[in-house]
Image (tube, rainbow, N blue to C red; front, side, top):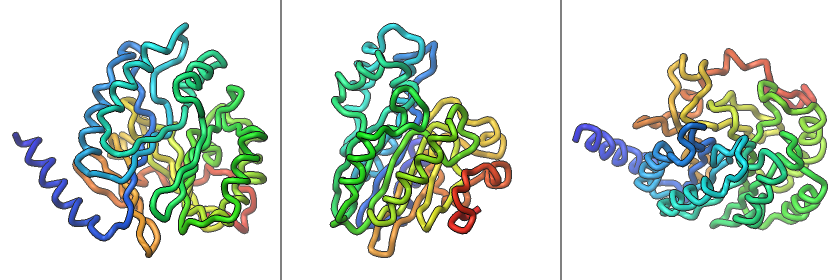
Length: 291
């Protein structure tokens, strides 16, 4: 009963806080189960209940949707996952993470089920671009075909704001197994497309923590891997817990709220690792990077 009342009070306060938003969307990532409980999505299901109470306009999952790794067949896990996401009341979109497309066979299963690994969509006056940066099994890679698609997609924007979503945060030097060439590729080929496409922010998961947030040429880069049952140890040690983002978009811009348990935190309050990981970010040009 106490937990129920706490949740209701939180929802009332949050609803009052967000009443002026024109559009609200949820960003979550790394919602996959553990190895020994590959079909146990109870952790994600609890989060879905909370998300449904908030009634966002849409929900975007940044990948690591199943455990995946090392298994001959991932289809039973995907079947369970498909059952779980039916409980999400808002329109739901996803991209694959490294757990989902860990080899070519796993990628083919993903494509057989979901048909595509990257896409874009419009909602009200916003444009959403979901990219697959795990092509050919390389963490951070976006291939030439996807790049050509993105160039066309962001040409002549008719929307007021756009948001981009990936799994691997290539700008984060603490993201392991990312070759330097894919970090450079992003900032030489992808990032220059974003300002003209009216992109306001880029969101990534993978690192099982929030932040630190970066700003390149006025575009915000967020790390938001808060759905995992295994969070980054230092993030937990400094008071962090499981979270998802609730992003408000209005005529005045956008605002990122971090929903952590029954708390609504600002992005500044949730950025607990800024001092620890502050120096570890890719710097393509110091004149255009915000430390």
